[in-house]
Image (cartoon, rainbow, N blue to C red; front, side):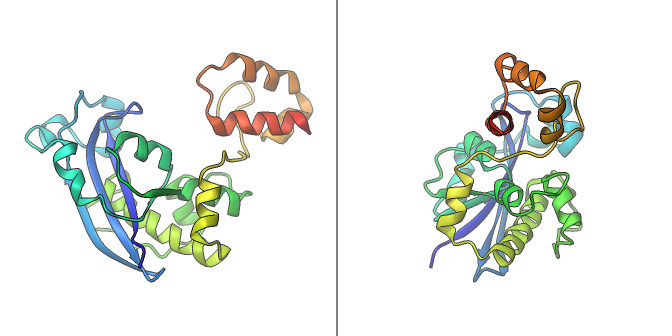
Length: 223
């Protein structure tokens, strides 16, 4: 039987540096089992902006093992499930399995929601998510339980096979709402109708644009 492992990391910032890793396994498409978590001594300082989110400080991880020393516990799954899988895959050593992204699955399945962030989806979808009492959102194990509940809900609502989920996870997401710039808060469809020149400007000017945003702008400019 294939092992489906939900995995999450907390980091020093957007550029990586793991300070915590955790996982849970999904058994028979509905049971959440085998919780694991480890603090990790990072390879760089923890940014204050990251501490403000996960509340993991330098003192907490100063004497913890390096990621290479703990990651073996998490390897060996056939499929890894993460919310924004490209990020977690990018900050972890080679895991050996294939990756499924619940953010991309949710964006495809529930396109009309205002956000596809993990905690937003938890409440918008009314997920039945048990979470550890001594943890909080943006701690790795806590987020694993929420992501596992989301994956189970997506599986039930979509009936997608694992192969279909992998295909969706490999593709960019069609975004709904702009999060940056002078049109922040408007939908891409609105901006494409009212001010397509701004979209063209953004496409040629913003060098660190996400693949999802680039894909979305190109989609609406074609229309």
